[in-house]
Image (cartoon, rainbow, N blue to C red; front, side, top):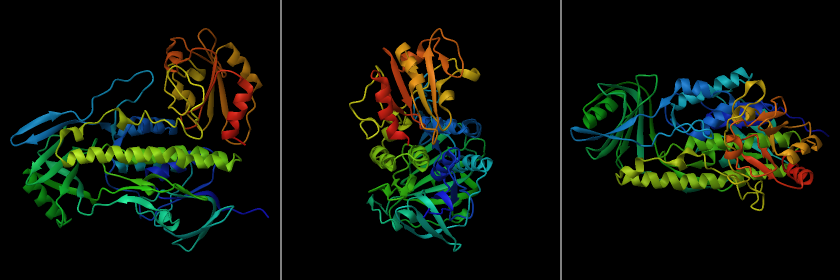
Length: 503
């Protein structure tokens, strides 16, 4: 008997993680339902830093121009010490290079990130079901039956919990959330306007009346995101007038027109598993940590980006074991993020300026899945890249006037680059299933013409960035990581690699 499904994938939580997952699944032809217990989309600034790697994800989804238009660069910090304001740069501004087109963090309030992704979902025909909670679910070998607060029962092939740190899905799946919550450590966050405060600085008062206070201007608004470190056991009145009085006492400035407030507790927790049968966790449902370093939202979006193409492939017939690589690849990344953010937060607690500094690790461009089940250590490598590494951008002349590899990679497909005559001659002999993600193959050369199957490396930068020293086939996964590097035994090696990803 054939199982009947209402939908392929039910996603719980319409924040950045759940919305990214839904958007990527939709373009793979996967049926998606997205629910959220809130009455409407998120209204606060909360997570406001979009790291370079996440900007690359947004470009692939086709919404980076919107993000850049609605966001802005991080301003220079201004450290207030008595009557003085000392300029301080949190992160050195990087220059655009051929391999890294978006080298700097983007300041974008979370409500705008959510809105951009929600508009993308609407354009693709998906309406988010707000005011809808998950009550319970039961799973078997072929699917998951979920009961919603409306009384409706949804039968899906997979259930995804992207429903935050207090995830109902994680709890119902009995997955342990290992770590700690310091109830005495709290941060008050407020979105509002501040009279008389310049908007060309991220203002920080490291020691004012025994508190740490900061105010970051939000781009294209007259608002600031205000952060006030609360003392242990301090009671706080969230009434607008009381908050304005507190801010005036601490800074001598007038806070008004408050639109959002939150008391944040920096949990540091990691899910013991990201998968239980046909149920998966992503984003804050799988990992929560301190706000230091602008890592949480970014890690969640990249969870979704990793999981979505694998779900799409398995739903279209690829081996179920492909889904095991999701936890194997993403959980170690989250563990490292927790470690990094905790170290930065500890330095901030000690009132050390080093805790405010940001470097290359926070940009998340160096994340690699090398050594995992899809990128074994005995794989071939080039002079610069290993299997599992991020596939960098590079200039090229391509079909339809494309000028960059990232334009070539954009979309839900796999990409195969062939360097050298032997590798290029192999392309016509390769087989790839018609079901699931398409494989697009390109011969790379200096003097050849450009068409649907050829791209030109006229500057030589592409081959240099990719470290090509001889005939090579390079397979790029749909999430922009290197799936395979083949330098000999072309056909047999390619067929073995393809079995990992396809039917």
